[in-house]
Structure formats: structure tokens, C-alpha cells
Image (cartoon, helix red, strand yellow):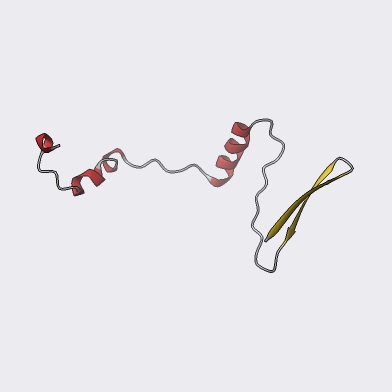
Amino acid sequence: MDIIKSTENNKHYITYKVIGGIFDFRFFLGEQSAEATLEKMNFYMGRAAIPPFWSLGHHQCRWGYKDVSYL
């Protein structure tokens, strides 16, 4: 896919040249700050799930530590 950005008469254009496939674009326009744009995108897509607290240290049990003094 080729993406060409051009400017003519103070207008900005983006041209996509593709061989084939399906376009799946989402544009979030009109926001003054990046934080507001990301907030709108998170509202659209949904926020990431927070893992349960007990799972955060689960990977450490696979390292073969015998006890706390072995560290």
C-alpha cells in the first residue's frame, strides 16, 4: 500500500494506492489534544482489562526458587 500526502491550495490530501484488500480505518477528528483523542478512542474500543491481583506474581513461581532466602 502506498500512502501519499500532498498539499494543494492550502488543502491537505491523503491518497491510498492499494492492490486489493479490505479497508478498515477509524478516524477520530476534531480534538484539540492527544489526550482527548485517546479518550474518544478508548470509549469507542473499550478499555483494557485489569488483570486480577493474584495473577501479577504468578510467573515468579516457575523460576525454581526454593525459598525467600535463596533470592
